[in-house]
Length: 324
Image (cartoon, rainbow, N blue to C red; front, side):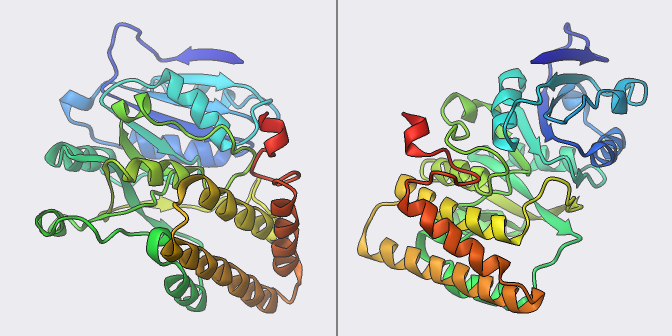
């Protein structure tokens, strides 16, 4: 791995760090860095570090070499890294400061969003991680939202409802809601968390649930939240994303892996898992009808075969044989 420092003063201690995995998306990375330059930061958070972990076919350091002179960057280039999850694990090794942000490279920050979320975290020290609300250029259909709302229940629901009432009331004014599932590409963590928790090294490639796995494990011990009053932009970049068949294949494999790894096999949880998978099947069928293609449906069948074969060949999960 090649590591280079840009605009970096090693004598300055970073108050927070930003980790950005990127691959073959130079314009998306430029858009993010431009939005970062426009941020207004309090004096106590004026020193920071951006860790860019680049897996591109060719190094993208020319994107910022002569352009972003005010941003201190630790640039790590390694095209052999396999996926955003692996890149995050590398980036966290260089992170320092009170808070660590993890962003996807196709995120665009809104005015003062970094300061605003750190102020929320300072205000509520019991919250260990908080993700932004996302304004996206890719909105799920109402039918898909409806199916998801019916089939993600129990331990698979997004927001948790087991916090004490006094905490729920305390967060209500700031539109903060406790959750099991953080948007990993738009999140602020207390850096101390990564002494205790890490992204799973079983997930690789364009994995779909590395953030879900991590935040669920953290949520079993600490409070993690979404803040609906803090909105940033997610410009879904299609470079490197799965087609419909691979996406559904990976989704069904990930959910089974997540269930095997993290969920107690009570009757209630088993029922919630079956309902979740039923929802995946229904959404695949809906997508097949909308796209006039059997690809999503075939992806579910592909994933089921790989689950029976210990995930061998799965796009996002290392097989049990490989892990040995």
